[in-house]
Length: 120
Image 1: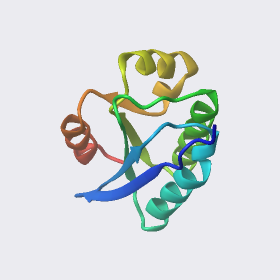
Image 2: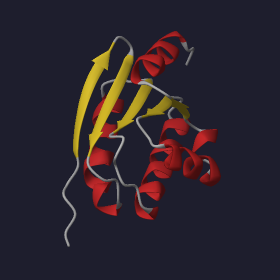
Image 3: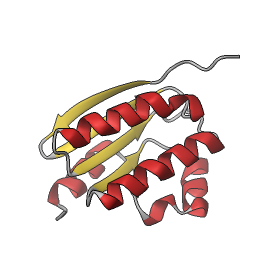
Image 4: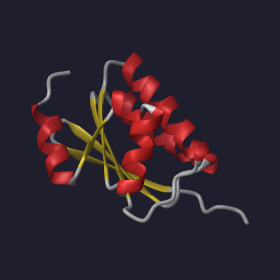
């Protein structure tokens, strides 16, 4: 079964760029997620928030993709946060080390508030 392409909308919230990710995150997500990241970075974004749908499925290919993007944000001196992930994926993200590079926030509002006041 072919996976649906992700729909990713970029939204500016002050100095934070929100990547609103709809759909499951798998290796099929690479073109859309990389494109959204490049678009936000080329427009000068230093603070990024990845918002997932609470019921989104993320497989090992999706996790590898997220780790690649987090490595790029580190090289580019960008701050990054994550919101919208289930408790299960919070545990998975912690186990694979994603939480060393990105903070997981309980809500979008808390994430935007924390990232807005964070120094880059």
